[in-house]
Length: 307
Image (cartoon, rainbow, N blue to C red; front, side, top):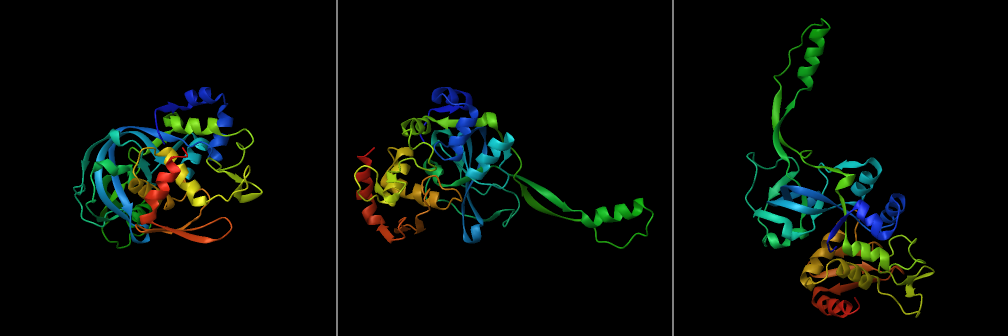
């Protein structure tokens, strides 16, 4: 996604759409919004074994914030959404200040969702490759069930049982500063251009941006009958939103996208597995293929010329 970033009302004007029509295109992934956050502290992390969070850094950030699809849809339905322990990503590295890899909490690990802390092998210039959430508040969480039960007995005149003194543990409150409202929605100029570029005959098909496939034959183009490489289409979608990035950065973007519950680029769910050396994927005809990292640069260079 490339800015500048426009409000909901401005986007409707630019596209000559009602709010209901715009929401329809969001649901079809023809256009995808972000939310805009005031400057506030963020926790940056990655996922480890069994999706446990590995903290890597903190920073101050003001700018576009990319939520998961289910959170965006809840925001559209309810008018607001609280991210809580959900995850998102920072979309404008220029909005990052005070990138700090020091462990930020007083209590030792594991703490709440954070099970480990690692220093990243890069600086704040690559924060978009990490997960992010508004900085949680460290606090004591009392285990008051037994205490509350005893108070209920006293209130009703029942005999008082012997109970242990309430204990407390330190945890993380992820509700702090994690509320986003519908007026926080923003649309990237590149997303508006994407929707405007769709042919009227294709615009009602879900998830079709940059697809060249005929609905009757998903691996052939409508005009020429030539085979379409679904991985190439995925790379084109990622290139369109991240123009100017290196092939190395694009690999990381695609790898991170593949880990999302609702990917922005792997909209056809073709990636089977991906690591630092290889992408294993399956075409829509169920043919399994792979591309090595050593061949990826040349592929990206060739596809870049098509934009």
